[in-house]
Image (tube, rainbow, N blue to C red; front, side, top):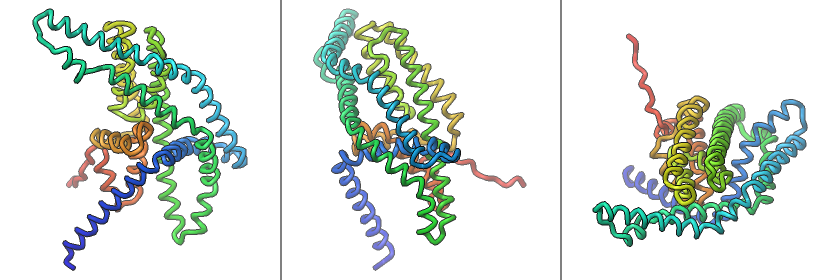
Length: 348
């Protein structure tokens, strides 16, 4: 067998394996999505748990305290936002009809100044009510996933308990344990720092958006703040997606002028958090290119649904950090990066 034919077979085998894995992910979506959410929460909780353990708190008690804090935050969130989700879902047809009426009014105004526009064309191909419907469907599907709260929390507990004893298991099971532990520690530290900083920035973004919409008098400000918090995990694109339903609702409820104020608030908050504070905290080395962000959003959203879209960039970021750990795969991490690496030149 020639080397070229061997390489072709290897490439085909890799592609076939990739297709099979993706098909398995889509088939196991109902099981995989709660597990990924649990892993995401466990990574965030690992930092506080290790902090408690370094202060001589027993592992079991540290896990219990962290889980109680997670449950308390989750219950508070459900109490504050749960009724808003239900009310918005019930009122969605009314908002959609209001947007269609606004669109037809715009068509009439354009025709009045001599611009001929077909009303059916506008309603068929430029229907802003579809964006509201998409937002409602995403909220409903995300709420359905969060209905498995008990299973998710149980998985988080087991992951945290296993994480406490993982270094000892690696030392006992691997021949070159210290090198593997150093690589794992670099990977774990990078992932925890990224997710912790991203969560804090996203939380601040959600708070600022909530306060701004509350000031303007828009309905469901807590709900839109939560949407801004979640979609802030998707840089560049997420802030735009989060703003669309709130701006459209402002058009129906408050009028075009107020909708511009809503859009300006989203723009100001995301410029402040996304362009000033977040890059300073994360550092340039943890960036992803815009193309990679968009492709990961499409891929994980297609494979895992709305939750996959929310976790798309953290999942891709974890892959990038894992590739950076080993020298032989670092070139792949550079392809995912948003920055062009500086070429080293000899000074003389």
